[in-house]
Length: 189
Image (cartoon, rainbow, N blue to C red; front, top):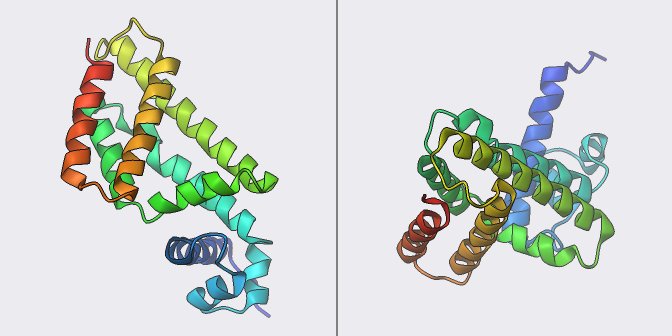
């Protein structure tokens, strides 16, 4: 039997993750099964288990990637804060996992593994946002009278509120307008 090359393993893991996002977004995390994920990928359940031991392990990988992708703000150093936060808003609106994050938050009260996954993801996003805001403060782009950690917390709360508004069906244009006004009030000097 030929050896599986590392690049193929990464491709296979990514396919599983994308299938899981699709299934979780459609059915919810709790109602989704490993059988459904395997079916979406087109592999056996046994093959799926060679990559991930559980749905929680897949979720952990999704949240890790989500944290890296959404708030890897180091790659946005050449942009001003407003452009970056606009990109963040667009990523949130276009994310297939937007609604999934609320389910995961709710499941955190019932499942210690999910609680830990959610906590790690939250802390990573908050830290990334804080570092980005500190950089913007050092550049003189945003207010400096409030610590970057507090500003990060406020923006994270705003982000959650915006996601809630979108989830309950408030028109995107109205939500986006409030996002822009709120960001300006929070960060402008």
